[in-house]
Picture 1 (tube, rainbow, N blue to C red):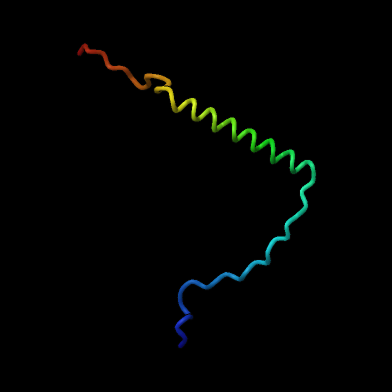
Picture 2 (picture 1 turned 30 degrees about the vertical axis):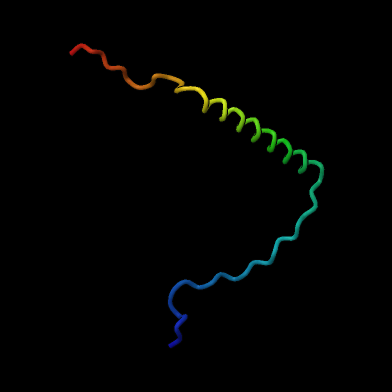
Length: 64
C-alpha cells in the first residue's frame, strides 16, 4: 500500500501555448476593447459621485 493512492491525482502538465503573432485585426480589436473599458471606468466614477438614481421602492403614506 502506497501513501499516494487515495485522494486527488495531479493533472498532466499541458504543453505551453506558443505565442501567436497578432495581425492588425487583433491589435485593432484589443485597442477597441481597451478604449471601451476606459469609458466604462470613467462613467462608473462619475456615477459613484452622485446620489442614488431613484428614490426607489414603494412609498408608504402616513395614513392607515
